[in-house]
Structures are given as structure tokens and as C-alpha cells.
Amino acid sequence: MAQTEVLIVGAGPTGLVLALWLAKLGVKLRIIDKTAEPGTTSRALAVQARTLELYQQLDLADAVIARGHKVPAVNLWVRGEAATRLPFENVGAGLTPYPFLHIFPQDQHERLLIERLEAFGVTVERRTELLRFTDDGRGVAARLRGSDGQEQDCEASYIAGCDGARSLVRESLGTGFPGGTYRQVFYVADVEASGPAVNGELHVDLDEADFLAVFPLAGQGRARLIGTVRDERAERAESLKFEDVSDRAIKHLKVHVDKVNWFSTYHVHHRVTEHFRKGRAFLVGDAAHIHSPAGGQGMNTGIGDAINLAWKLAAVIAGRAPEALLDSYELERIGFARRLVATTDRVFSFATAEGRVADILRTRIAPVVFPLAVNFEVVREFLFRTVSQVMLNYREGPLSRGVAGHVHGGDRLPWVAYDGLDNFKPLARMEWQVHVYGSVGNQLSAWCGTQGLPLHVFNWREEYQAAGLARDGLYLVRPDSYVALADPQASAAVLDRYFVDQRIQPGSLSNRAA
Image 1: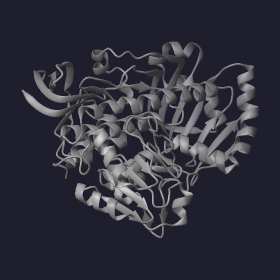
Image 2 (image 1 turned 90 degrees about the vertical axis):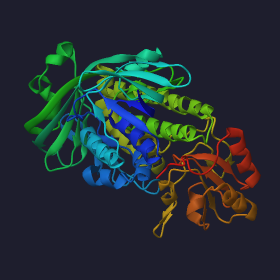
Image 3 (image 1 turned 180 degrees about the horizontal axis):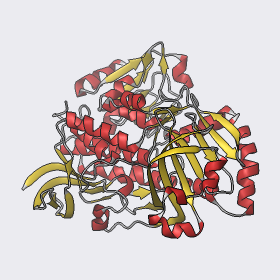
């Protein structure tokens, strides 16, 4: 019987990132997928700033940026004319190393992740399907069907369901998938086109016609069209062709389509499972939550799930944290998923609502009010923080304690850079670490040295104060770069008490880590 520590079911971006993190931390894993090959088409496009920050830990960020496309602006169209242009190139300047919206299609994204995973000696087991599994409290016994059609058994310490909206892992756990389905049918088309809306920027039609957004892709004249189909056409979604979708919205944006490389239709759901963990099984990404594509949040949220879970699994497997640490995965991620579904539902409903009032709001009021609002820096910053996911925090989570300056336990560590220095550079190591901005006391320095806990001291500057950090305060940073403990007194005793209470051993997550 094949044995492993973590069995990952599903090799989309979520499963691949989970596998990459675990592999880098020395965890023995298998990753299976019932498809014959990686996807060649995709709906997910946006890679948000927070994802790029986390990708620094996998040395992936630069490759994603090099192969993708930065979006310089978002344009809103009304009645066939560009009504508003919102510059987006550096909207998050000073907040993150990646202050922009980045486009990198999911199919290319998956191929990059697979390349990196293979460098760790891990290969996706294709045409391998999970048939069933049992959890006896000590481990998981899974029954698989391999590429040769033969069935085999696999023992694992844990199983992670990254197997999408129709997750067999979720169905086996019986955690439900409450929510609903939008009545509109979505279509997505990869096209070669020309026209003013194919200029490397993002364009959205706010008219009363079917919703349409034109996303730029890397390469001259390449774009991804994402739109909706209503009326009687929605009832025959599976048989629709590109010629069947409304050309009214396409004409409104003055898009001249020269070639359709591929076209697909799909229904969009808004659902969140009732539990992300049950025993030794976990639900991650679309297996746990799905929502409308508004804001480009889906794939990024799944990747965030994977990274939140990965370091906790690695710590428990290495014997450096108790099993109870794994409970924090659901507690930290499920609330965010529920809020995200509610938010994207409101945005999508506004963009696609029908009727005279809805048309007036979209075509007359929004094009006037929205540009006025985003003239205010505080509004632009709030929008960027929200969409980029740098605002996401775990303040109410069981691992979060204290406040120092404006930074709470559970917050993302604020990014500060000056003169070529960057306080995110130490985060490339996936480990617990302490940051002090200012001077450090002998007791704290000695405690960290004794415990093997990396201590990073940054000379005080006004930039740290502007970012909300407290002078001479202590910030215990988790392996996923969120602050676990913030203590203005920088007390070694407070730090020691944190690890004692959590029953976590500081230092490396795994004795086998590369």
C-alpha cells in the first residue's frame, strides 16, 4: 500500500500551490488529478498583489510578472463610448511591492507551477482518480484508480480536497454546499482582435446590453472576453457558439474580432461549504467556496487557502505543533470566504441587473459618481486594499494576539521599502521570525538566540511609523507573513508565553526543510 503524508486531490492552481509549499518544507506528498493533461483554457486571469507577495516565498513572483501583463488602467464604457478611465498602474504604491493589477491566465499559471513542482521531484499523477476514502482518526485510507485502470490503495496522514466545485472529497465529508446559482450564463472567449478596447487596458461595458469585460493578455491584439448571456439563449448554454452571444455589447466596445482561439460557456454559483475541515480531511479553494468572477478573487482566494493550510500541516507533521493548530485553518479562512461571496454577489448583481432603474444607475449615475469618488486617495487605497487582498487579516483568529502601533495580531505585516532595503526580504524563508523596528533589548535577543528563532532588527525610520509600526515594538511573524503577536514592550516573557500557550515550537517548520 502506497504511503504518504499528504494526499492532494486536484491539480489546479490551489492544489499545485499547496503541493509546492509542502514540498519545499520537506513534506512527503502525492498529488493526483483525473484529467489527462493540464487545462489549455481558463477563466481565472487576475493575480492579485497579495498572491504575488506570498509567491516571493516560492521564488515565483518574478516569473509570474515576466510572463503576464500589467494592466495600466480600467475603462468604463456607456452607450458605445469610453466614459471613464481609471489609471491603475501604481494605485497601491507604498502599500506593496506589487502596486498594480496583473493578468496571467490560469492555464499558463498552472504550467509554471507544474514546472516548479517537478524541480522538487514531485510529478502530478495524471488520469488518477479518487474513488473513496475513510478516516479512522489515525490516518486516511484512500482508494484510487490509476491511469492503467487498476485500483490501488493509498495511506496518508491527511487528505486535501482541491478538486473543485464538484468535489468528491466534500461530498464524502457531507459538509454541504449552501448557496445558489446565477441565472445568467457566462461565456469566455480567447480572441485576436483590434479596436480601441484592445489596447492593453481593461474595458467594461456598463450598458443595458449583456455584461462584457475585455481583459488584455500578453501579446499584441490578444484579449479575453468575459460576458453574460440572458433571455432564451441561457436555456441552451451548452450548445451556444460565439456567434450566438450578443454582439451588441461587443460592438459597444468597438471590438473587431479577427479570430476566436477558443470559446466556452458556464454557469456561476455562489456557495460556501459549512466546514473546511473534518477530521483529517480538508477542503481548499473551489471545493470549499465558489463565487462570481467579480474582482478576480476566486483563484487568489484558493491560493490563500492553500498557503494558510500548508505551513500548519508541515508544522504538525514535523511534530512542532499540536493537532489543534489545524483547527485554525477553518477558523481563519471560512469567514473571509463568506464575506467574499457576499461582496462579489453584490457587485455582480449591480453589473448584471435588469430594468429601468438598474440601467439608470449603471449608465448615468455610476460613470459620474465613481470617477469623483476615486479622485480621493483614501477611496483609491481602500479599493486597492480590498481587491488586492492586502486588507485580509486574521485578527479574530485563535493565533492572533496583541496590538503595537496600528498593527494587530492577525494583520498582514506592513511592507516598507527604502534605499534598496525591504522588510519583506526575510519573509522568503518559510519560518517563524521576530521583527523589531528600532532597538532590541538583551533579554529578547538572548531568548530568540536560545530558541533558534530568527530575529530581524531594522533601524528606526519615519517610514515605519507611517506604515503603522511601533518603535521598538515586537512583531512575531508567522511562516505565511501574517503577524501572530504584536507587543509594544517587546517582552521576551510575552513571546515565550505565546509559544507555550499555542504549544508551538519556534524555529524551522520541518527538520527536513531544504
